[in-house]
Amino acid sequence: MSLEDTELKIGGVNLKGVWIAVVMSLATTVGGGIYGAAQFMGRIEAVEQAVAGNGEAAEKLTVLGANLETIMKNQKELLDMRDRIAEVEKTSVENDLLVKQFDEKIKSIDSRFQKLNREADDLWKAIDTVGNPLR
Image 1 (cartoon, rainbow, N blue to C red):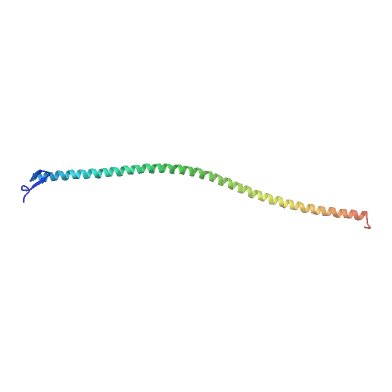
Image 2 (tube, rainbow, N blue to C red; image 1 turned 90 degrees about the vertical axis):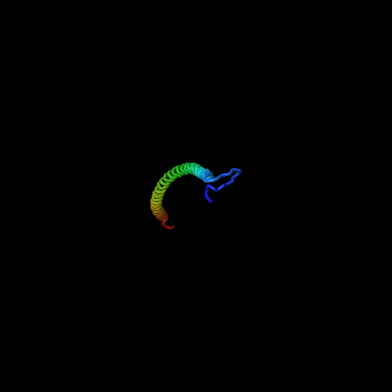
């Protein structure tokens, strides 16, 4: 059986010999073109989705950038507060030392006054004794 003797009947059309090979090559070419076009369209859709995803990522990055700016601003304020707190702590320690020094001075003065009061009381007793020796 040779190609020249072969006959193919498709939808009321009789194909003989070389025409079968021509129709088959045309059909496979058209099928391959359709398959290639479908693959190409699939790739285009994938690229479009990736680009759309990049748009969402860009929006997220914009929001993230704004959040980072806010965090940096707040961090700067916190650092300023930390410096002020350190100054207040230093001043507080210095004030505590001053209070302790003044407290010691007041206790010293108080003990002096107690001594002076005791001497004054002793002098008054002496004066009372001199003024009234029989008592």
